[in-house]
Image (cartoon, rainbow, N blue to C red; front, side, top):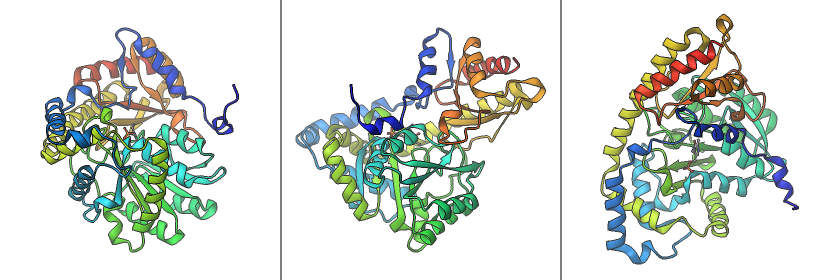
Length: 398
Ligand code: PMP
């Protein structure tokens, strides 16, 4: 069959091959990017969906506006205010089918073949694939434990004049890194200085374990005059409430939001009204703060357990920054004392020992660091984490 040329730019992810092996009995998996389904607030969502049906079935089961269900837009505007973005009117956001759709709409509205887009190295794999599908030439900006290195970012912006810069400033996938406050301000200043659009993808910002992270770029933007007009922000209920609801949102300058809405209309007309009405009822019922407190506490415990186990079982063979939120530990193999130093090699050995993770290379759009790994602490309990990391320790020793 003759497919569109744009498909030449992407291939199915190497990770899929690995996932095929996960069915092996007894495997402990640190590979997924999923939240733990045992933590879904089933009761809260049941009540919310029942209220959606008893109070507003006509709207909840009918076609709806492409921009989103108005009561949900109002709830999301209020939710953003609780997170420091106090001035986002309901009309300044559209509801998307997961934040993945927001990324797709940004790709569709902004990227012409050959356009340059700067992303972090490493970054979210599906973003790499999505932007490449639209023909983007991706430029990789290096990161450290404090997120993207802003001096390097400035150099790359000046050199490549990108169409936009895509960042996951808070607990990135896969890096888990948190962009420092100082660097956040710098990113906004760079947006203004070079008149470059910044896309902030923020599905993990609510999943912090200790102190709250610095404000999102969106919440900080009033402090840097002119930056708000150069900022798009993607949010999601997936990691905190339920990815199956497929409720995300996009906040963007009016002109961009209008184009994204137009493209969404041709794509899925609107996000499921039933899911939107359910999400709106859930937020209205005031259950979110309790849910957030619960998931933060459970993930914090698991992150601590994974960090402790890695230090104990892998010792000098791996280095990593202890995550302060999110779902992932991003580790780098050092090869110390003859230990395995390649993430892909280790992934295969680890499967034989009964533990799975994702090697880091697919998360780089260029110059992959072969020594890296992404370990999710989200879905295994503390005992399983300890057992899985012990197996990893055996695998790394060769
Ligand atoms: N952005 C990032 C960084 C992610 O990790 C994910 C989910 N893995 C998404 C966007 C998409 O999430 P959703 O479409 O479920 O909101």
